[in-house]
Image 1 (cartoon, rainbow, N blue to C red):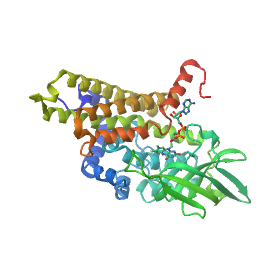
Image 2 (cartoon, protein in one colour; image 1 turned 120 degrees about the vertical axis):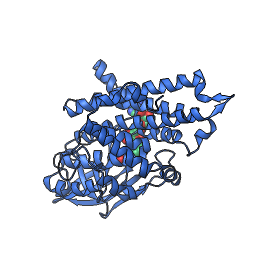
Image 3 (cartoon, protein in one colour; image 1 turned 90 degrees about the horizontal axis):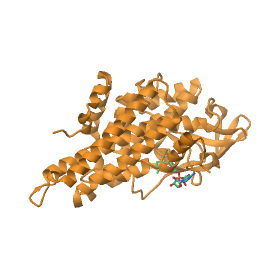
Image 4 (cartoon, rainbow, N blue to C red; image 1 turned 90 degrees about the vertical axis):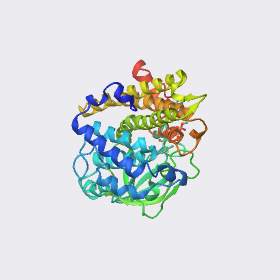
Length: 387
Ligand SMILES: Cc1cc2nc3c(=O)[nH]c(=O)nc-3n(C[C@H](O)[C@H](O)[C@H](O)COP(=O)(O)OP(=O)(O)OC[C@H]3O[C@@H](n4cnc5c(N)ncnc54)[C@H](O)[C@@H]3O)c2cc1C
């Protein structure tokens, strides 16, 4: 008997000692510090800011970035950590993604030396929080249609517009804001205490309740020329960061699936119906086997993409393969796990419905299922069907 589908295929033999050690370290942290409290945070709809500094100390913030106090870990180690965090909760993994893969990656990849020195060490330590403002109320899947505009005024930039769904914005110190300019889309590091900047958390979410997403208003926000990210031109800027974050999702969602599977497996072994454990019925075993196979395939896919990434060979459409497949399978697994818990499955005492609700967000942000299907359709046929 095993409670991990990964044991069925000897997945650990594919990992190095360092990779296993990183995974085990993050797993121990999630078990001790996050899992015991997550239902309460989710129920209350709060993001626990007290986890920020410990996550920094564990090297989870900017884990994949080199220098400037960042973790300098491999893509595979980063992925394994994402899976462990998301086995706790997608909202908590999302914090790490927004801070590290989006905000810090934007500065690390496109920032000036001065910007990197100023922000990255503090962000890696959890002493400063960043957010990433790309989406607008009327520009999500098609960010090229964004309306937020930055105009030159002497040496300054003056930014006006609005953003929606921006993770962490109300607790962030800086916002990486993507805006149209006369030269095309550019990125800016905007201090959140700048005059004219306001972030309001989005209320009444049914998903990602232990995390923060905000509406942002930018009303003639003035920043100096030095706030512009000098290396970012056009949509290549935000898309580079999104690809980093999407890669983390490929692993992360499989963590949520694995946690759902384990909870369901444990439950059906304890729970008796018609005089036998639920696990003793063929219908139940069919569900467990189907879930286990998809978890194994999802982790193998994530690992393959990670190895390609570490070799510098990962292509954007390959990330779409992972994001589309693993989100789709993870949410199906979480829902099946919920079903196997019967009525108890609709409470926060068990994780699967919380995971399934969170995964509705994860399959939506950083490219919906439709968008990644269109990316792959384009790769397969050579015909773009986006519009
Ligand atoms: C919890 C959460 C956190 C987020 N965090 C951030 C963040 O930190 N920063 C940020 O900038 N954004 C963030 N987002 C925004 C997210 O990236 C967008 O919601 C996402 O890109 C989809 O955009 P949209 O909501 O405007 O949907 P739309 O683009 O309006 O899509 C609506 C529907 O149309 C479909 N569709 C779109 N294009 C096509 C097409 N060509 N053909 C057929 N169907 C199509 C979509 O698949 C979808 O089903 C977050 C969103 C959520 C829910």
